Amino acid sequence: MSKDCLFCKIIEGTIPSRKVLEDEHVFAFEDISPQAPTHILIVPRRHVATTNDLDPADDAIVGKMVRAAARIAAERGFADKGYRLVFNCNMAAGQAVYHIHLHLLGGRTFTWPPG
Ligand code: 5GP
Ligand code: ZN
Image (cartoon, rainbow, N blue to C red; front, side):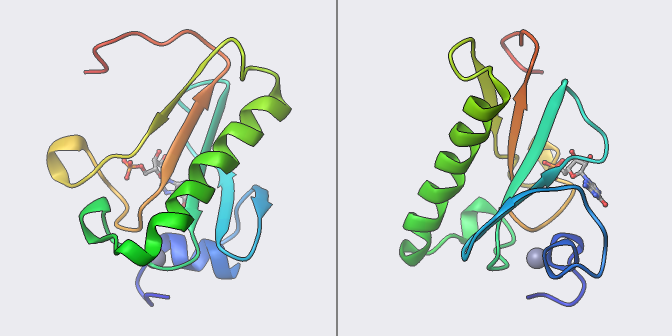
């Protein structure tokens, strides 16, 4: 928990969110500004500022984040058609919230390169 972190506050419930799932290690909620018909953020409960700050001990949690995204994609019915998973890291990638989050975007076709 980092006291000035928006996503820590969402996880603890002091800032409201539209929760999608939670377990012991992972919390998922709807993005406030969706960029696709489905846009969900999957975050670890542990505060980690960027993907550069992950420890070896976080490997299992990152795996849980990715598998949670795949499970949500299946539940929403676009797992087979396809979806996009994104981690933005630091300024050049447009990271705005410094608590790592996996974007799950689905429900439309995506282009590449992403811009
Ligand atoms: P980033 O640019 O850091 O990869 O993504 C941050 C994401 O957090 C953005 O997609 C943005 O819309 C979302 N976001 C920012 N503030 C809030 C908030 O208060 N609630 C929710 N649910 N999403 C937020
Ligand atoms: Zn945090």
